[in-house]
Structures are given as structure tokens and as C-alpha cells.
Image 1 (cartoon, rainbow, N blue to C red):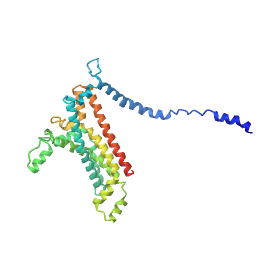
Image 2: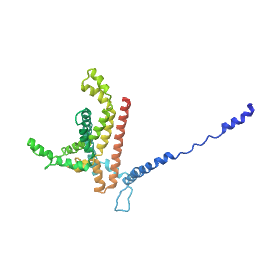
Image 3: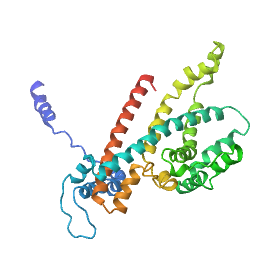
Length: 315
């Protein structure tokens, strides 16, 4: 028996394994997105990088290669590109530092108020969310009129109630940020408030009942129950709001047009001016890549912090 079965066992052991068949069905589903991603993301990035390495002139048939000349201009003190790029980048960073804490705190405060069973709760939720559906041009024109130096509603109210002289909001450095920050908070507050309202609805009421039985004050309940339970949503709101604030463009363009003396000009607004007003396409492309790298580093830091916090809270 042993001699008879040996050849068949050897044949079975040497039989080649069936080759896996290539299943192309998943790739067919991914193909439309891949094509759109290549056309609208990969190709523009590659073409922009090519432009930033050449002296691009639409009126000339020759585009000479200049290497990293336009990147060096950004980091060389004394050049117009370096002066205006870093000044406007600081303007954008200042706007983000001021507006993000206000947007998070105000949204959380409104969500806490509108989470309670008060009269007209649905109406007030709609009122605070409604400005978010306006376009940036409508929002900008509205707040430019509100803070207009001569006929603005704010100066009219100051004169009516306080007999105070008008303040040149739009033409004074520092004060010109007030309508931009206030208008942005009014415009985008509703989205963050909606996120907090949804998160508050998921906090178990039994936690507050147990804290009340233990004699906890409202502040202690907020500090030790509400804040930890809302931590993942708060991090998400912080990340998305900071990224949106760094993309400041329309508000400063419509309300102050970057003035006075470029004190409210955002970095994206300056890059647009460099490319489409000064016709310096290569310089604008280089600035775009430097700013994009800055945003990537910032996003990586924020996501790293968010991942560490989620791991610590076990969410």
C-alpha cells in the first residue's frame, strides 16, 4: 500500500497552486474618481510646480528655466515678494488667532443655551444658522456698510445713544480688523453651533443626574462632564475652523480690500494680486507652494494632536 500511494502523494504535493485571478471590478468603481482626481488635483499641482520653476510670460513664446529663483525671493529679506508675503501671512495668522477662539467659545455658549428646552428654541437655532447660507460677497457688503466711516450703522448708533464722534473703522489700522472678525463670526457661527448641539444630544442625562445627587454645582457639571464629553467635537471644530480661517480671502477683499496699507490683506489675496494683477505667475505659483507647505505642516500638527487626544480619551 505504501509503494502504491507514494507517487500520487508526490504528484499532489508538486501540483502548482492556482493563480489568483485579477479582479478589476473594484478598479472600475475607482476609475471615475481617479480621473477627476488626476485632472483637477495632480495635473494642476504638477503644472503649477513647472510654472514656478520657469519665468512664465504669456506674451512670450519662450519660458526660460530659472530653478528656485522665485522661491529664493520669498526667503530673501528686502525683496518685495518677501516683505509682502510674510506681512500678509502674519495678517492671516493674526486673524486665525483672534477669530478661532471666539468662534469656538461663542458656538459652545449658544449651543448650551439652545440645548435647553426654552420657548422658540427651533426658531433661534434657525436664526443663528441662517447667515451661513449667504455668499461671502453679500456678507462682506453688509458688514462694510455696518462699519462705514460716514454712513455706517455702528457710527450712527454711537452718535444717537452716546453722542460719540464717528470712528473711521475701515481706514484705521487695527480697527479695520473689527468688521472682518465680527462679520466672520456672525457668518460662520451657526455651523459650529450645530455640531455642538448634536454632540450635546449624545451626552447621557444620567451623568448630570448622578452629579446633581452628589451635590455638584452647574459649573462643576460643565467642567467635569460637558467639557470632557465634548472634547472630540471641540478638536474637530478647532481643526476645521483654523483651516478655514487660514483661507481668509473674501471677507477682507470685500470689506476693506486689504487696507489700510495692506494691514488686513490676507496671504491668499496677495498671491492672487501677484499672479493676476502684477502678471507674475511664476512668483505667485512659488508663493502658493510655500503657503501650501505651511498649511500641510499645520494640518499634520493638528491631526497629530487630535489623534493623541482621542487615544487618551478612548473615544
